[in-house]
Length: 110
Image 1: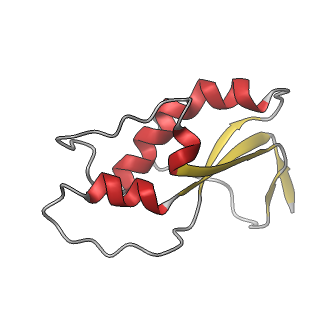
Image 2: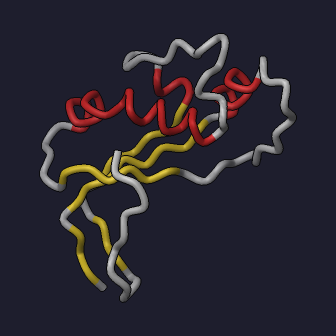
Image 3: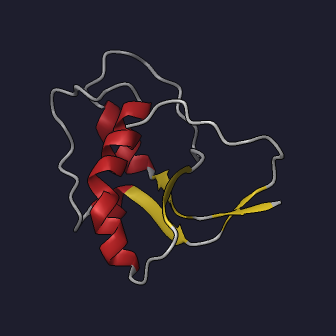
């Protein structure tokens, strides 16, 4: 087991996010009742959750939206820092453990 030098933001979409995002979609999508969270790795050392989350929330909303294939939505959701918790369950942490023995590989650098 390796301890990684990263913190994380765990983001789980709430049903309101999915229903609002897909309401104008012409494609039927099967969506789970409890979608699994996405984990966004961030710098390891941070002292204030709100400050660090504010730094990344726009990229997180973009990433979550792209997962449903509607990033070019005609009526984009008005998600901002003040209301983001209405759409997502969010938690932050500073301990990331790698239980796999293989080296980490990045698929795409953003």
